[in-house]
Length: 605
Image (cartoon, rainbow, N blue to C red; front, side, top):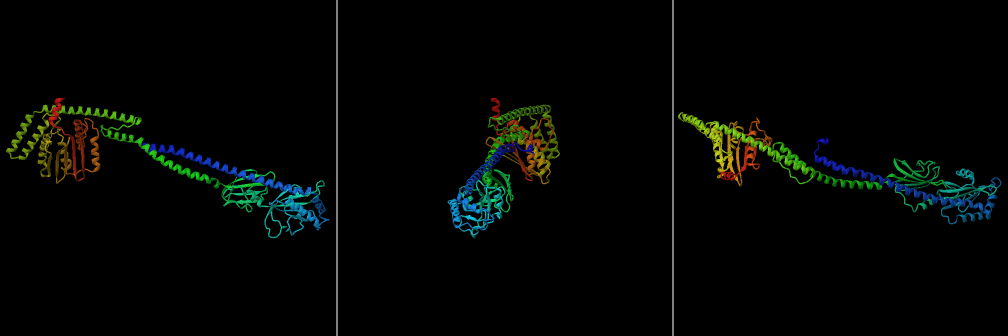
């Protein structure tokens, strides 16, 4: 397919590809690098936030863990708990007011100033609940039936972190969930079971920690343990918010890192930080669409910028492709004209590059070909003239004239005046044709010969052939090539009006315009169409080697065009105009030359 394209389109395609391909690759690489950088910064930021949240939680929980150990260092607390540690012997026994007052003061002192603590409960072995809250309605609790007690007892004295759970020992109206730090209290030394301590923490401890952190739009943050128990959840906009109903897949073995997750057909980056101290996992879910939002803006800007650059590049490419190919296009057009035989074609040379060198080479080639062709035609013309001179020397003009005069006298005696006129005209034509002379003659002699020819044709066609001469005064003395008009008149008769029943008119004109002489032969015959005229004009420029056997209107006109160019140079021209049914007009333009001027030039030469 490219083989059929012109050089201009190939250059245009090459320049656009040379600009578009690197620009596209650079844009794609920039977009990918920026997207990766944005994703990396977002994940690093989320990792830092998660790690900081976990460290703050660790500090809070470490403090609660230490707080849960303080009863073991207070003798009064140990004495009271030891007194009611036996479930069987002290079942249902209420501590004294003094004992409860001591425990209340101790617990209140421990919880003082800790806004994150909702309440501290110390449960004795017989189930009695010592607390710092004054709204407790339940005084005894069978802690062995509590849903979370198995994990606390299994820790065997170590602290346990309980996920958010409803608590029924607070006053009605407090429907909030709390998460707790719990531990089994054992007497130091004897390791005797004394009871439990449960520190209930408010969930807004997480919100307080997150108050100063920037949160991703449409993102989510969760705090869970290894069992996927949800401690805290925060969502923004259209973030993931269905952990409890359909928790995303987090395995207990998952540790700190970045994971790809797809939830409800949307891709998320799950950034997780795992605490070795508390076992809590802080997980941030960042939607990919938010990560790529800035990248999308960059992509749109890059596409817009690329479109602007491509438009500018296209204009520049068109300009340079045109500037580079235009000399070659002109050279091609000139070569096509040379192919038709017009060796006068030249191309303008404006540059010093290879195209300029090619143009100069073309000009030198056409000049040389034109010179050689002119030499060939000049030699051929001189050969024809020599043959004509030889023929003229072989013919005895007196014998021909005497014979024609005898025929004329016989026609007059027989009253055949038409024959007499025809013989007289023929004699004039022969005398003009075979009389040795130069290549050019005065226009009046050429018109006289054409008039003799037309008298013979009028005797043949009668009233069907009408002739009109329109010669400008003073033009009769100008030089014209010999026998230049007779072939044109002959063409007009035989090809223009000869076959028409109604005949036609032939108009022969001569006029001088400044330094040019215009000779015109026009008829009102059948004429020609545009296509036929184009072909006929093309034949005027074609090269016809000597000895060619072609005949017809095109050959006669081409011979005339070549003769006038050989005699007068490239300034001599032959033009053809016409239309179907309107006839044909042939105009010869040659330099206006006086006989005297030519004689003076010849003498001076």
